[in-house]
Amino acid sequence: MTLTVLHEADIEFSESVIHYEAKEPGLGERFRNEVAETVECIQRNPEVPRLRAKRYRRVNLSIFSHYIAYIIRADEIWSVAIAHSHRRPEFWLPRLRTL
Image 1: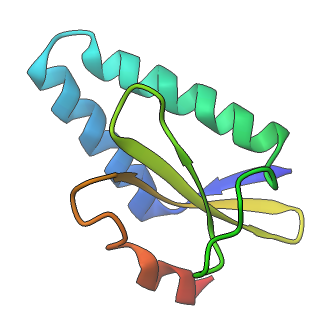
Image 2: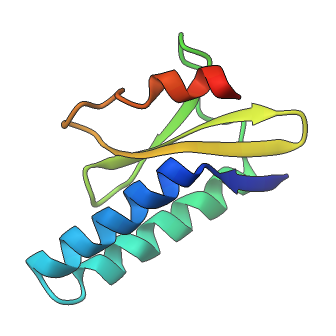
Image 3: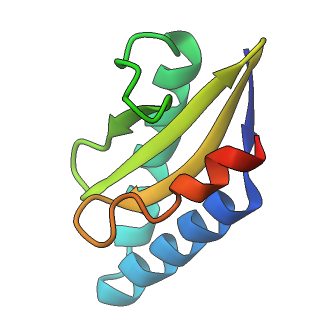
């Protein structure tokens, strides 16, 4: 399956990398690597995480307090958010209506 990252999710990702790198040099790169590894897992087994009530799937990062929310449409995975787990965790839900 191919993966498409919504523009908003890409911005969230970039902002998080910058935030972590500002906290400690190298931490942004660790965040970037964990997101990349998680995306690879999602692409290998996209239907493993349970389907949530709002019709999306979510994978929590292991080290950082973030998760990747996505939906599956036909043969495509749409990453709709890379969100912090504790700060407004579902602020991005209106994006689902556009897909």
